[in-house]
Length: 493
Image: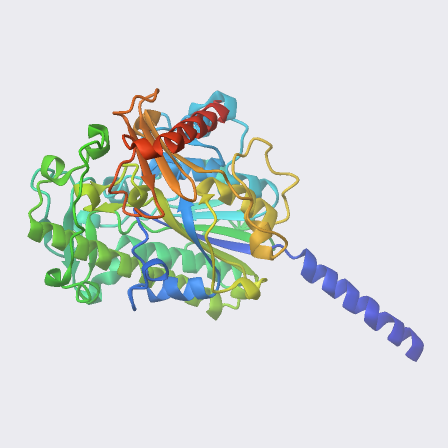
């Protein structure tokens, strides 16, 4: 019997180790709204976003990640479908046609990123804005927006007060009074933060995490849909810092208006007019004081959003879920705050198309606190998750992104992309970004006056358009060819 026991113990250990190896990772996916890289991990702003700083220390910061369209709906659809906007057909914020699978019959059977993982047995849940959702209107009405129901086992639409929050709304953009596209700020009392959309979203996400940890989910749900023994993919949408810029008093206190600095505005004579469609004087009419207030309110909103990230991370730790949960934080696109005298999104400047991305994988601590400076895109997330979760062979063949898993797992480097590709204005304008250069074209054909070329090695602010520079003629022609090759290589469905 002693010999039998001695023989059984290593077998038991082998079986247990196989079970651990076979255990699929959970995923907590957090996406912010209209967030640029003005956060601690990217700008070393002390104590601005302590929770994102913490996440970056426990993961990998991607310093050159680019969205595929600097507007909520098309960008999120591209991320979720794993396809460029010109491929999936979503090139605007629209409620008319619904999600890409509903509006494009050729992609009806193409599952979203979470729909694919759901097919593989994952429990997938959405809280608040993952696909497009109107802010503030859609949030105030508790609408789902053009969601894809097949993406989720469970979906929760937050009904938040937004512009009806308990405070006084201050309009900052006199030429644009429309909430949702204007600039307005609201300072709410500290003890009423629980009324806010993102606080409510974090509450619901934590309740779902409690359910996955074996505790009761306070919001009653259909038990058979919980897939209690399945790994989970929980997608949490945080709507700040999307306007209106609302945050508690404590967040605003860190950003006094008088301390806010406006970027130096330098606009070259040969910048295409189309590139300047979001100039302040023409679209918003903000005074210098109002611009400073807008920047301070944006930063305060980011800080409040960061607090909710911290609540989610704390919940993972408290429930002992962190050791098997991959945490990913991204934004749908960047945001201009006065650069080139332009504000908001949809432009093709670096500030509008570059997004933060942090991936924290508990299984590879040697990568924690590191930075990946390779060119990456949001469409890379679909194949990355597929590989992380063990389904790279089953993933759809038409995906257009590249998995980042080899780099994070230490088995290889990020496949070096020739360029990142972003479109805007319904696909009528596009830009490519290489390690050194950005080339942008407004319209179908290159014509000199509708092009931009920037050398990021010595002009990271994109202040000098080199299209008319004789010394840059060779580079311009090379970038034109690269642009045409990239655009023509994208399959339209």
